[in-house]
Length: 339
Ligand code: NAD
Ligand code: TYD
Image 1 (cartoon, rainbow, N blue to C red):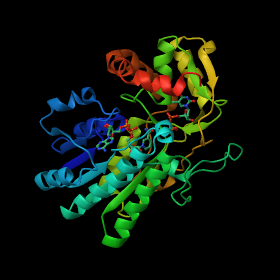
Image 2 (spheres, protein in one colour):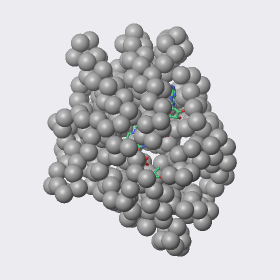
Image 3 (cartoon, helix red, strand yellow):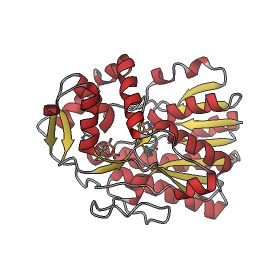
Image 4 (tube, rainbow, N blue to C red):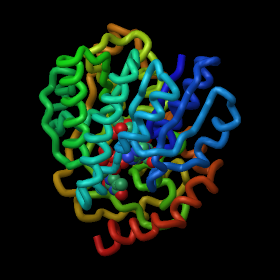
């Protein structure tokens, strides 16, 4: 079995590569990644020592390069993680989100059709469903919830999903889609909520909470996302969407306070800043379908996962200190100074 993992030098893709190499010895895993600001080869250092793993630098929107790779490697399965993934960046500069997330998906699907890939899996997000109101805790996203996007990021992911479903219906393309809630865990890029708050707290810098911090996200430990995708690519039905989430809903302010408590830092570090434009209030996944059809259940509770994650950031300081000392500084200044 030979699997192409696109975007494998990023957060979830790299965790998926390690998960697959351990779970399925003998599978060949090829990672295609453009190494944008979010991609980091250091993350894959250990994988590089495995003879079943190969890294290829390349852009999923580069049709010629993608075709050549598919021709040479003859993949059985393609799992597409490659994307621009940060909502705040999509609000500032939407264009690259449309290019990578939509056109990149099309290029990968065309090559998959031409070289007869047996299964194409699109890694999508619960953000395609828009948001739920805070005063209706009884509501959850199911696979039937209408697409209703808020940000250029979620609109680009939803567009890609529609294209995947259209390829399935029109060409009988053997595709599946998963829509997962917010992930956390090792190798999470420090621009996202949890690693940003850990890094700032450790440096005794202020923790910028958007609005009143009441927005709710449904947090899933990244390894549980990987196990769900592994099940879908092997046993999921083509043409189907699977929601992934573990009923771990938390208000942002509570996540931030938990991090401060774990690190023994004072709550006075919290600073409320101007809210994100179009900020989604609540995400909440109903994972009944993947549980009933594929027997998937998450293994890591938030209370354990957040401790494991904080420990990982404490044990792997060079990995993230290297990132935040580079061009990230300019990004931080632009997004947070005088906010
Ligand atoms: P990430 O930003 O950490 O990593 C993205 C990776 O894709 C990087 O390694 C980057 O170099 C690569 N990449 C970007 N543009 C590329 C291009 N044109 N060609 C090749 N490679 C390119 O993102 P992530 O958080 O790991 O998310 C991975 C996928 O999972 C995305 O599709 C995202 O929409 C989806 N997702 C993320 C979450 C989450 O909580 N992070 C939740 C649900 C779904
Ligand atoms: P983020 O990690 O960017 O994920 P997403 O927007 O895809 O859910 O943000 C998670 C939540 O945390 C979201 O409600 C925005 C909020 N947030 C802050 O309050 N401050 C921050 O500095 C960041 C990055 C996010």
